[in-house]
Image 1 (cartoon, rainbow, N blue to C red):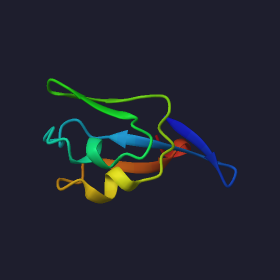
Image 2 (image 1 turned 60 degrees about the vertical axis):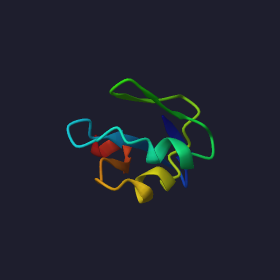
Image 3 (image 1 turned 180 degrees about the horizontal axis):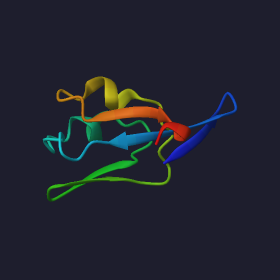
Image 4 (image 1 turned 180 degrees about the vertical axis):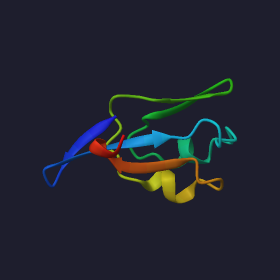
Length: 70
């Protein structure tokens, strides 16, 4: 779930307590790295932390963060 970008490790952080499991993020992921399984959002290893999913999330449940922040 992380990618080397400009020498900074980034990762997608899912706030599962906020996520409404609507699937908006799944449909826009260019890598197909997100999968909605029942009431759980799975992030696969091919996630590049591009942030497209975070931009479309209506609840703000996804964010791309510096791995050191986690």
